[in-house]
Length: 490
Image 1 (cartoon, rainbow, N blue to C red):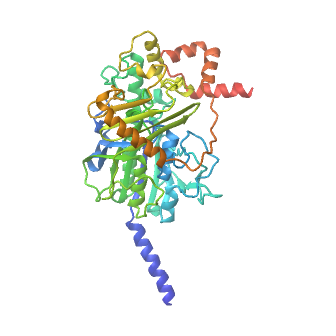
Image 2 (cartoon, one colour; image 1 turned 30 degrees about the vertical axis):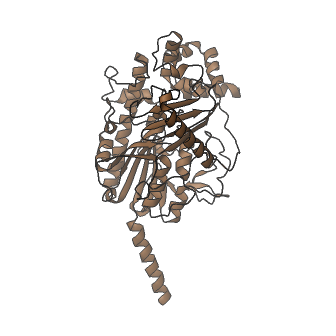
Image 3 (cartoon, rainbow, N blue to C red; image 1 turned 90 degrees about the vertical axis):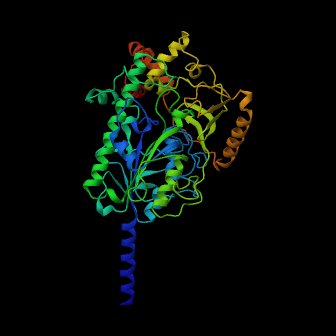
């Protein structure tokens, strides 16, 4: 009898503890920088994210640790820098289990009573993207040996799932063949004539249109955020749910995704946590994407493991001055760049300066209209001093930018004697991180991609289509990728 009472008491306590734990939703918008109205971006309307920021906390200095999706997502899924876990090469090592030192944070959440959910029934493509560089399955158990499941279920959060963690990908902002369709369906497409663009972008009609389409996707995505909040309210779960909104890496354009400049690393970060966080705060503290992982575990009442390189953001002990960023393999381009970013300074070390920023990467030939336009303008001497560096035949060995005076990173101070002391300090800091984040393993199983070979095939087989690409038209990567694969099979 006493044993039964003890069991009932333990069960009751576990139920009460579970009910007190917050639900957590992680909204991850793809390929976008801080291009939201609440961050001061003109020409775009994001009322739902504006509301989330006004009732939550907006972070001004949040950065990913890699500006490409899969290494960045790998770091967030584990909570440790991608170089430390040997997950730093894009879409590589998918057949290699994580070292036994590491586990995905969803495993830790499940061990502490959370239901883990991937995607949402109402967003584009259901938001189920995972894209991490270690052996895994979307659903199922995890032991890291012969079971590699990351989540419990797809698409729906219900009261009986509480406490739950839901990771929802907002894919619409990722470059895709739907951009034209979204713009055409918009009742108020962004006006190309009133756009404000960064000074390193050339002012050209095709580039303006491409920028406008990007902002159209952001407005579509903002509507999806509003829909998810409404679902929470309709199900009576809004008051006990932490919602985190971020980008997985910077915007897919000049200097953005794939590069260590600010538009590639700086991401939006808004955290909404009713009754726990004072709304309307705008914080300048420097945050790494891996800190978000640590913050989720902390909010769930889970002790943060020692292997994490992230820290709980709201802890009194939170202490971060720099975010260490690195760029390695992306499709057929194997880079080796590292750097550190603070609230005031950005430093980049390029160990392969002979690889230009404009490396004619196959995938980007389809998805960067501005590159084609500005490449031709560069050849004809029509780019200004701020626009030319991206198209030079080599890149500098070192870059140093004063983010307070030069937020667009237009002036590289690495060769300026007046900044020798700052350069030396950040160079030393970067080397220290290089050692600290060094992986135990050097296994390297890259995924083969068609690369520029496919671009050359389009040029040979569809010369008129290639001319359209050069004129800044997105001709449809998916369409020609399928044709190319079919040709290879035939």
